[in-house]
Image (cartoon, rainbow, N blue to C red; front, top):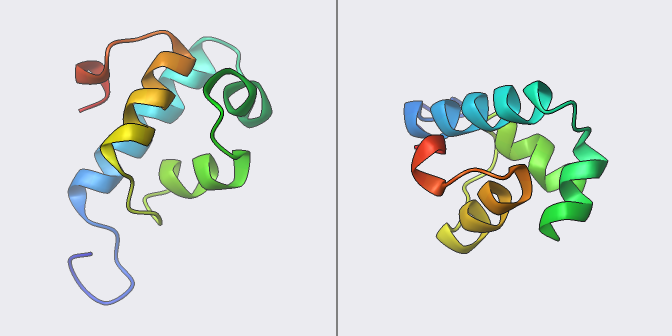
Length: 73
């Protein structure tokens, strides 16, 4: 976080890209959760930049929306 309570630019960028790709593929949070094995509420927090995310989960989410991880970075 850049300031107390403010998501970092890296978190925001990753989350915005993930949300845009998920929506472009007409996937709900629940759809992505099922496809990736990552809890839907965690995905929601990642998309809004509120959650720090491990590389393993980044990879699982990229696989869940059918893109290479580099497309989310």
